Image (tube, rainbow, N blue to C red):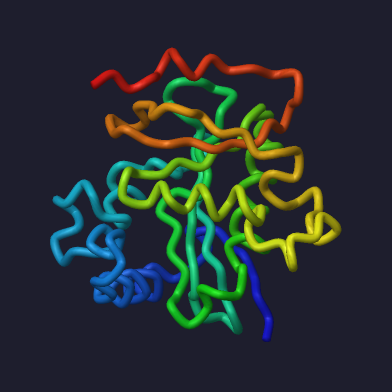
Length: 203
């Protein structure tokens, strides 16, 4: 079994679209509806639209990563420089792992480390993960086990992993991409501070 992380621009688009189509059929997952639509060129919520029309993950402002197992796509996730600060990267965007591999900590081991490294390579000071209201409960999982550390042992955490330098949580929701979001983040530069109240969501 061989896993490999590549970028979106290096893979066959039809292969990726088929992956998205398959994900969209998993209707028990709220995010599935945004993975694919036959009219994706007109559907701003779909992942192909963000990649091809909106170009949110285009260099130098972002990157979209694909996880392969033996050359088959089994996961994806993106990172981009936030609109509110040139020093904050929003990672874990549009993450999807194939159902057969969701309990294997592949996001922790492959996709998030690639995005954290991208943030470092682009001189960002913070790598953040954001959550909608419907899935903000995932934050508690991150806080409990730092993305699935084996038996909670700190020695399973390596510098490549997200939250190696600690997990910070914003106690209020903020506006990101015009949507209220809940945020956890890691400081890549321990001396850097961002005032999250400047984007606090006001009801």
